[in-house]
Length: 141
Image 1 (cartoon, one colour):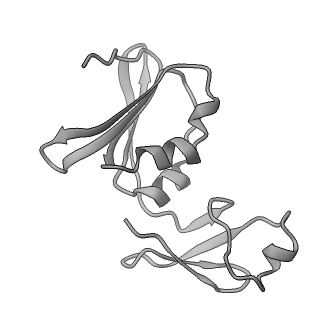
Image 2 (image 1 turned 180 degrees about the horizontal axis):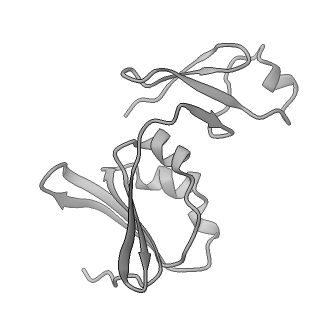
């Protein structure tokens, strides 16, 4: 398999195997007019298997979304064929419009124009709570 190197863009590395399509969806990569390569189940000495996404175009990456999906992702910014920046992620303290509250009595159900805000309440268990109604949302990895 031959995947070209990118000149200007973003490489998302160390994605938990099988999570690349979630990232593709959440970041709306299908709407880009550039090359996007998804490598699934690549061999990794550290992880066993991993996914990688290469985007051959400079773009802003929502680090909160990526950190929510998989806090172990590494974001590499590529300029002129050289990695110029490497970012390590963590679970975000606050999520805005990434997930929606499932509580039917939450104000966000009656007022859908309100931002869906979730706050990290337990980092170890990856639990978020709705800022309006305190409903719990767990992210399983």
